[in-house]
Amino acid sequence: MWTVIYIAQSEKLANQVTQKLNAEGFLAKIRGSGVSKQQYEIVVPETELDEVQEVLNEILHGH
Image 1 (cartoon, rainbow, N blue to C red):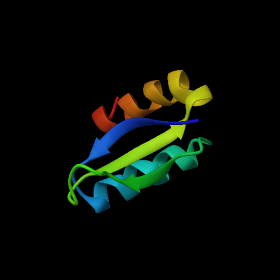
Image 2 (image 1 turned 90 degrees about the vertical axis):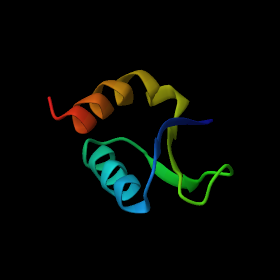
Image 3 (image 1 turned 135 degrees about the horizontal axis):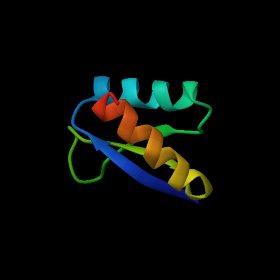
Image 4 (image 1 turned 60 degrees about the horizontal axis):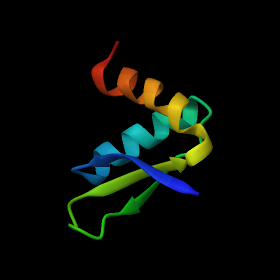
């Protein structure tokens, strides 16, 4: 099952985050948000959720 881990406000940001997660070996993909055309959900398999959250924090905050 796929779980939303991040909602990006632009397609460019969604692509950048997804590419970095994929480079780290995670299965991440983008799907359009049903709420707004300007929001993009980044989803990952539920089984990878804990590991992905740590890497996502590093990507977003540069630590």
